[in-house]
Image 1 (cartoon, rainbow, N blue to C red):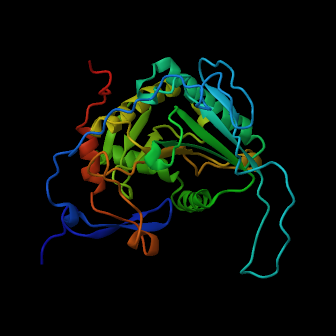
Image 2 (cartoon, rainbow, N blue to C red):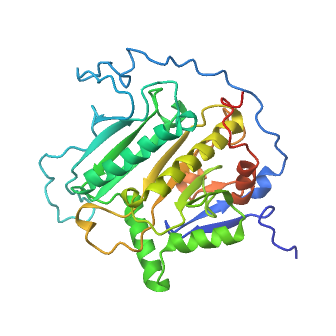
Length: 350
C-alpha cells in the first residue's frame, strides 16, 4: 500500500477553533501553475470624487457632509444593521421558533482621504494611525457591547461597492455564532492543556516552519493548517494578547510593517488590489471585560477568494454548502507560493 503523502492524497484536516473539518484534495491540482493567465487593467480610481460618499467634503445619503479629514475618519453607518434600541421579540415556548433581542451599532472607518490609496502603499505613520484607531474603537465600544467586530471587505469581488480605503465596525449585545464557537473551543483547550490554544499553535508553527509566510519580532503571518480559502492566512502576535488595545507601542509599529508586507505579497500575486474579507478576533468585551478571558488570543483572519488568476474565484457552493468545506491547494503549497512573492509592492518598485 502506498505511503500517505499530504501533497498527493486526499484527507481531512481538523480546525480546533471551529470544531469542524475541511476536505483537502491535492490530487485535483496536480498540474503545475505558472501564475496568472491574464492581467486586469488598473482601476482608474479618482483620488477625490464628490460623488463618492466616503471622500472628504462629500455629502452622504443621509444628507450629512463629511469633514475635510486628512487622516482616519469614523462615522455611524448610514444603513446600520444593528440599532441601540427597539422592542424585543416576544418570548416563545416552542423550541423550533426562538428569537432574542439584538442591539448594537455599526460604524464606518476610512483609512485615508484618498480613494486611490490602499493599506500596503500607505506610509508607515498612516498605517499606525489606522491601528491606533482600531484599538481606540474596540476599547470604546467594548465598554458597552459584548462583541466588537472589526472587518474589511476589499474589492468588488467581496461585495465592496465603494472604491475607498475603509473598514466597518459592528458592535453587538450578543456573541455572534463564529465567536461563540471559538469561545467554547478555546476555553475547553485551555482547561485541558492549561495554555491558550493559539499561543500553543503559534509556537508549534514557528517550530515547524511549514506554513509560516512572514515572521517579525512580535508577529507571525501564516497559512493555517486547516485553511479553507485558497490563500487564507492568519496574523498572530507572539505574545499572549487578549485585545487590540492591549498591544504595546512596539507591537503596534511592528504590526504596521508586517501588514504592509503581507498585503503587498497578496497584491503582487496577480499585480492587482487583491480582494479579501478580513477581520480581528479577540476576547469578548462588555460584561466579559472583568471576567477571565485567558483562553483567548488576539488574531486577524484574511479570506481571499482568488485561486489561479486575477479573475478565477473560489466559490463555496455545492459540496461546500451542503456537506463541508473543500480545497485543492494544500496549506503548505499556499504558504510556499506566498513566501516566494516579493513583499515590496509592485506599484512602488519603480
